[in-house]
Image (tube, rainbow, N blue to C red; front, side):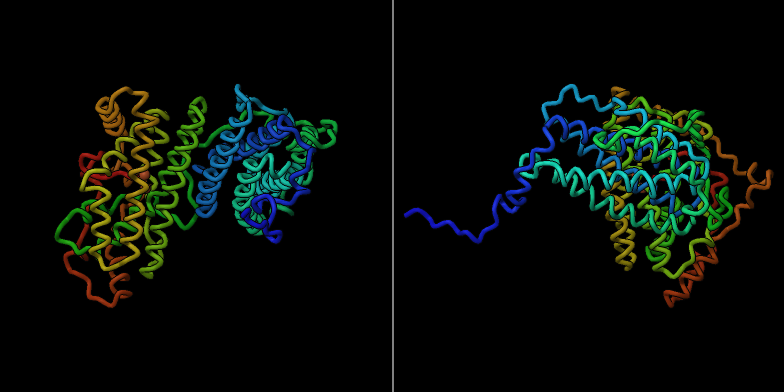
Length: 470
Ligand SMILES: [Fe+2]
Ligand SMILES: [Fe+2]
């Protein structure tokens, strides 16, 4: 007996209506052209965010740029994969689709102030991209082109998050009122000159000269922080020596681990410099390194949340930027990558990330344990990324490690000079913070922990004696 059809079931696997499956407005070639143009904008957004992580002083923006760079890289990647399924080798994904799109992106990249950059990113480029995705979804055949529809729908979820962040930021900076209307219209005109992101809208004449992108972009590799970060050259407390000392309790050590996590804000500051200063690297390198960059920004926020949970105002603690500052100003991009790999690889043995997780578990603070558990997993991924994109160029692991060690040893850390030059007094911030935490925990401080005053003075900036960031 043939089964009886059920007319009440949704048609077409629930994917779309018959009407949406009958659209013929976009051929496969039209879709490829449009997707490539969206890909170009995602890629440029990734570049703009990355280029401003290091010198953006505002902590929230530095973190959001790290996340948004990662999201843009992931969505660029999904379009690359999709285009490769559409009878399209050679892919031509490095071709600039239109000079007008290029100009708009260049202008936002080169915008000299945070307010202009924020406005260009969140009030112009991202909304235009979102609009383009919406139009694509409204025009394409949702059955025949279902794989593109799927990835663009995912992209819209994250675009909505980015736009929500941007909307609040635009209000906070009052950029709608402070950014020159003439410049904003230049951004819109250049996109309109390209026929919109899709290239399918009426093309308007190119009327305005470039304002900021007439000069090539200059990357600022010196890390900047906002006013909550004080005493950035302070190396007056050595958290590693405390962490590895069996004398101290796991509970007390969670504070040093939160400090180490928060201090990782210097890793995105440094990694962004590698991405910006090695533009010739293949796309896969950029995508993977940006994932790692975002993970490190996330690790910094784990530290922030840890302190919050312990009832500590972290802004009382000097969060050093010595690592990113020294690497960015003393080493080449390739040398920085070698140091990063050397440090990441050093975190893998039993004394590294596993140990931190064990301390977290033994501490009685489930949040510390959970954070270290995920942190450890991320670091395993980062060691893999290093093997893929750094060791392979070297040929062998030993040579790659030796080079990383050599580069790291080359970095000069001027502990005494920082005092002599009035940059810091290397104030011992630990006892205050520790006492506050003990009060919040309702316990008496351990006198030995309270008396802890190991600094970085006698220990050179070398993993042989201490752990670096990352
Ligand atoms: Fe890492
Ligand atoms: Fe990390």
